Length: 438
Image (cartoon, rainbow, N blue to C red; front, side, top):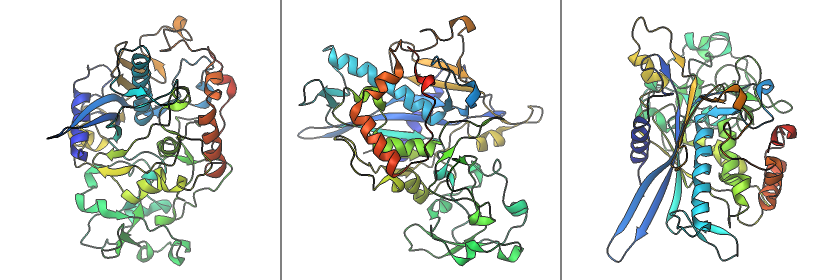
């Protein structure tokens, strides 16, 4: 197969090859990168070959508020890198399906046994890459400085009941290879129930994921800015490891007003059951498409938190339609850091550049022949006039009643109902009027 570093390096090189438009200003702006990579393995009598191809790239850190959402389908609600990369991959799959149906040949799809249905070519699989831990549940991970030494109790990190969310989320420069092995023991102890307000009580016990190493003392957990969905459990906001509840649905924070966009952890968990192809492509496929491997770049990371957020909470879902299942991906981490990460941007920052900020633009690239590159800001495609909004110039495809097409995908919708009823009953139901564009 391929290694995590090979996947990360390929994605970073593909991003570097893109035009300058939409990229962060070095030393002042940072962003996040995600990608989908196709792996093609082939066997012959004397050899085994593996080919890697980047299908889509996405950058971005922002979402729009609920009052900014458009019923015309011309504004992107969620511009986080993971969502953009997946959206670009769907565009690529649509192109490949058209090639297969028209008899031009596809490197991805071949005819299935059932008439009118298509399946993956033998040896084809998909890897999802993210330069960072997905926001939401997967980002709730232990904070520790060293494997060999227990932490000293820290007071400056614990003021007002916990460290600030913005300063802890993705500071990968404080993360070393030895810290990657430690993950949260998800059980409730008397220690987490106490109201800890003395410095001497502000360290908590953790053990590495395979339970073979020593128990270490860690002062806190990394926070996520994603907020719990209303109507269910809330974060306790207690000091240390009692600050967050784990396994909950969360919405991404907006600038001022709330958003309706679920966290990337929640969306990846949904894709691990329903597939990343979406409802529209599911009309034509024999079964759902899954990411066999998820690779994360150098950043604050916990294998156990990734598994909990993206697989464990959905693993018992039942009564899914044929072709759907709870897929358990392989989780890997690369030692290579994204050059435009927040930590690298802070290292490159120079006096006089102004304050460091997330890049306002989002880049979407996919390996298609028609308009492979788009840049958006605040959900709007750059270069589209207000007069053109709501037309095919603002949308990539002139769809007929988007909601109707989605709901007509019976197997997908059946599996989505089971997942929502059994695992995610609090998943917000979107305004149907926002899906009636044509």
